[in-house]
Amino acid sequence: MSLFITSLNSGSNGNCYYIGNDTEAVLIDAGISCRETETRMKRLGLSMSIVKAIFVSHEHADHISGIRVLSKKYQLPVYITSSTLSSCGVIIEKHLIRSFDPHKAVSIGRLSVKAFPKFHDASDPHSFIVSGNDINIGIITDVGISCKQVIRYFKKCHAVFLEANYCNDMLAKGTYPYYLKQRISSDHGHLSNDQALELFIKHRSPQLSHLILSHLSKNNNSPALVNSIFKENAGTTRIVVASRYKETPVYCIGQISSPAVKRTFRRSSEQQLSLF
Image 1 (cartoon, rainbow, N blue to C red):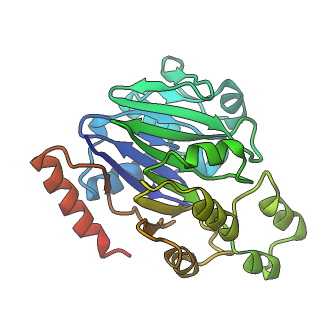
Image 2 (image 1 turned 135 degrees about the vertical axis):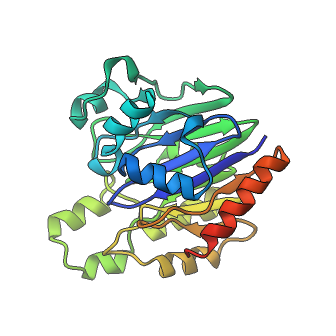
């Protein structure tokens, strides 16, 4: 059984990541509108009918703005900690609210979702590992530092959405006020290109097939720069830079399980490659 992954959007204007097999899927965050989520999934040949849950990393608007409508329309359970729920200001139907504990797996059909705490300027921030059939997909964004937890789970990944938010020089020379530059570069801010690259070089596992660089800053980074830096050190890992404007192709991690799924995956990949 393969896992199929895509970034539906990645950046300060909205974050939403899809991970699934051929019968069930989850969304990690829902920071774009319900309509955009539906539109982008349809373009990729993905169906909302197999999405079974939304997991929320933290309460910032670019991770939660689509949750209320999406969860209500499709009656999707929303896995969110009590602290994040009280901080986010989003009204979720009570019967759809679920909680999770760090390091304890939540079963969604044949998928397993495990959260782990991270450093970020939010009330109770978490990153996630989504697993199925011994394949591990990491969603590690909005991270101030590569702490022990981040390193521990990164080492297990067969594919990972990893933050590469800013270039040190671009941030330092940019127009952001000093306090904001300090916030972004602090241990509770975001990972720089250099920090993400160090994590990748030092701690990637031999089975890491795809690295999707995510949550790039519009003003303090460049997709071309990120792509160049990481491709120089890629080895056998495929490097992808997630867009803040469009979905990525669907990537198949592991063996494709059936001819029908293989055809769907190939069509969506061919259609989307032209976007980048």
